[in-house]
Length: 597
Image 1 (cartoon, rainbow, N blue to C red):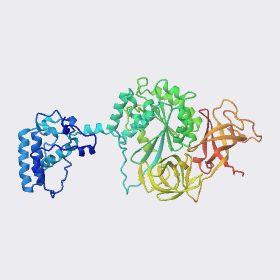
Image 2: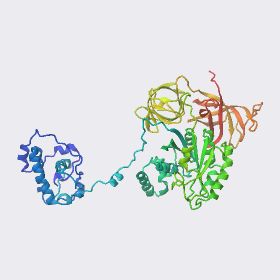
Image 3: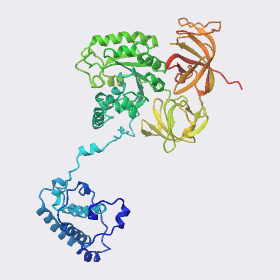
Image 4: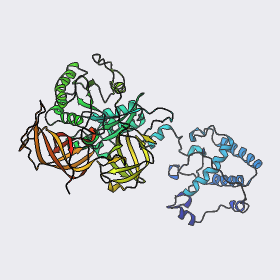
């Protein structure tokens, strides 16, 4: 086989192979002008065609030799000679073929054609392939189209909304989607991102094709938030998904909490960062009942959201377009009647704190635009309703408090968290509690957009200097040096026992979830019982507590944790106790107990 027809294994090999010199080229090479002007490649040259895409070459390579001679003459000629050569080549090309649209160069000028003629042999040389006879018609080349580019782009770039320097900052609101597994939380989140322009149509079309290959056609919208391969394969959210979208007035961060009971600790971490909760329930026959009955996540998630400090709850009755429901008012009212008494018991005010609305996550009905199939619903669709909610009160003047949710290494130590109070600036000196490490903020990112200053309510990524990633744990808190948060192991708290089969005595162990911190604790002493109705405290110390009772107890954590009293800082003073995969109690910190040396 001719060595020119096969590509070398490496570039070094190409140098070692002795080039086949065609007779007429020897004189041309000896007269080569080494002082010729630099070759300037043409970026608009015809697309490079590899040898395997070229049809079988014909008998001889005479045209190659002529082309090579022309190129060498062109390289050493003056401008007048070059113009003459260009006209000759153009005539030769016209005589060989009239249809050059196939190569995508139908409207090129003579100068462009000259550049292309220079570029094509040079590009083909490393491959060692010779251009076949028959001109462009013999080469299977197609013009680059937008469709081809779409196919090649595997990973879509996240769309970042342009930030105008003079524009006032929009209010940040963190929205957590909670509810039973398979209620449609991730699908609604993906649909909202598409409707607000944060995910491009072609990206969703790509997800749809991939989901169809796995026989999961209805899952493609959830893939905008479920980026993990395991989550996509099983259709279950494991970690809290993060995304953001903007409306005219506000900037929203979506926190997509997992619905499965195995991942409730992750859901608590997501709910602790939220200002607003969206409880998604399925209107489909059987699915609502499964989620709402004892052991279903609809109940537990609503209670945990209230404990995490969420004041406003929107209940989205999803899957209203299902054939078993078909936008039925009766089914909508049935779900509503069952939920309201329970939510009232949890602590939400049905008139002020709860808002019900029907929707379909898969079709996007009633998320951005009103739906014609539902004449009985007269309220605003979901996104306009979020925009119309009153502004939240934030503590701009308070001490800096940022609870760490996650951390990783990326050109330094990067931490993630929600700023609860105070204002953080670039290059500011802060203290990481409870380790008391002094750190410097190298850069600030709010929802992937770099900024110089962050205000309360924003979800931030901070690149820190002065601390290693291994020295940080979720649940640590960034504070300003003048006003550090409290830390310790022992504290007194008021606890409500929600669900526990047997009695709870001193010495009982459970897992404490307080803000983003997870720590094992022990109830060391029961101080008194509290009457639910009157609030009176018993004088005698109880020997045990049981389900539905309220008590004040002393708790001791296995390690040092950051916390505040509920009275001083509610976000860091409320907690839940879990045991054996169930939430057994909720409570608030009343008093911090100093450690005895």
